[in-house]
Image 1: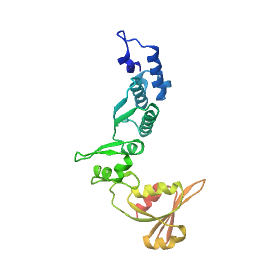
Image 2 (image 1 turned 30 degrees about the vertical axis):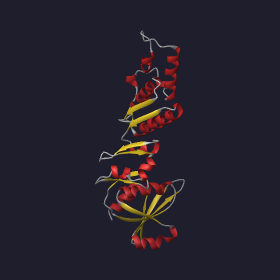
Image 3 (image 1 turned 120 degrees about the vertical axis):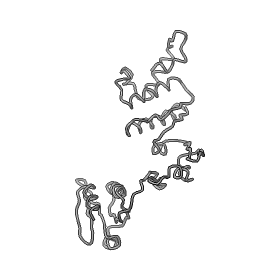
Image 4 (image 1 turned 90 degrees about the vertical axis):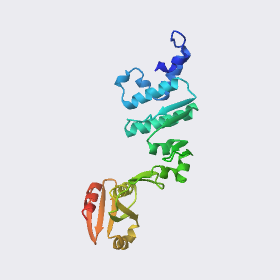
Length: 241
């Protein structure tokens, strides 16, 4: 960790009390005090990345340049590291410039994005500005993947299997929509009172019923009602229709 203060040491490589204080501050800033006494070979990838960021902070830089700091980390650690960097930029008033393939996190956390399109044009601006201008969707457009400007997410091009009329509210309905879209169904929403009319139009209707004890799904196809006790079972049933 003290290697971060190497540019400031004397000919003998000695650290001053001020250097020691800066090193301690850097470790504390990244939440790694409990890791300071452990050997680097004992650290996980996420923990090691925290230590490397602390070493960079100990150099007292005006600008930190980071090359894919979340590479090889699992999703929770990627989110943690990106949130840490955002927090450090706010608290230390330092600029942090990094390259990343975590596009979702960049959209959520970056103050400014430098986006190099496939035709070599550099687009610079707030993430939301690049989305609204169409630059983001154009840059990452492909035959199999598209950027959904409404949700800010990437979606695979999947052949539509049909239309599902969905009834329900709450958290379960959100994940039901995700599950149905994932396997290729077009989802429409309606009030429960219009269930009969909607079933006639779309032929297939799914109602999500949830309470404090369980969640279940009732599908209606050609006036026949089926009950499913998991999204897996519901999707398996719909795939067989």
